[in-house]
Image 1 (cartoon, rainbow, N blue to C red):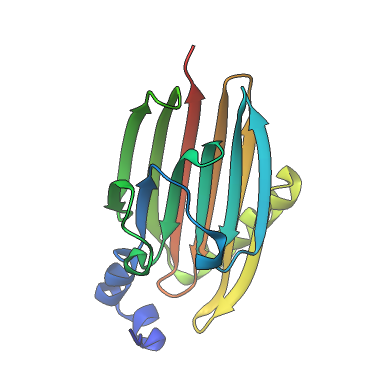
Image 2: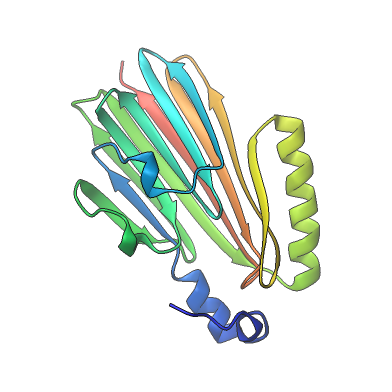
Length: 190
């Protein structure tokens, strides 16, 4: 789909349409890395399970589990090109959303919150600068690039606790001056 980025940055209704293309998808199976443009990858272990995090421009994937027995969270702009097999939940990111689900076969509770904002140009650029400082200080995963409308950035910050893993993502997209924030918790039962 072709987009006129010039119109997108100057027309609020087009900005809203751009925001509504981002989707959170939850899978009960693994996805393959060749489907994505990976820019960074990290693996951490927690309570006998493993979290694998992939960062891509404007998106991320979190895989939590053991081997092929896992849960995957994918945030992507156009999830239509991603497999539909194994989808247990999917929703658009516009506005604010909360979702939780128990995966008894893994012994894991999954909880996520998604918030989106559209900012004016100056606030978007200052937010981007603040987030770059945060990512450096937190030693978070980070990827910066430019789209036709300006500078963009994706950040993924991971924390491991004794029985849970927290992941915060921040995706700043210049086309539309969009900021998507997610906070996800994978909590081991017991």
